[in-house]
Image 1 (cartoon, helix red, strand yellow):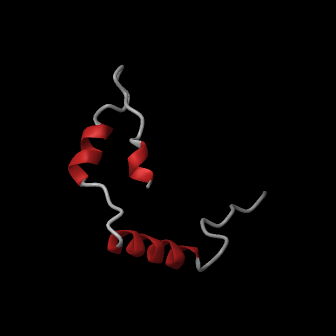
Image 2: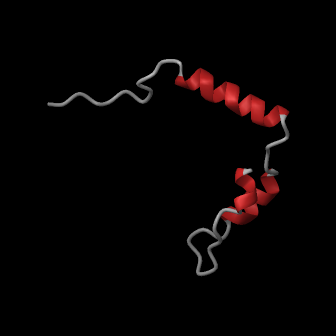
Amino acid sequence: MKPERALYEDGDAPARARERALADIAAGRTVRHEQVAEWLKTWGTPDEKPMPSEWLK
């Protein structure tokens, strides 16, 4: 039986991801919860919306 692959092959990956997230917050690169919630309400509906591209800037 093949062993399962580790969630993080690189043990430092979670720490680096956290540092990137904190830097994004400090730089103001965030999206308000209410905006995300409204977008998520469209999922699985005939009016499903793509993620706004400005959220990736």
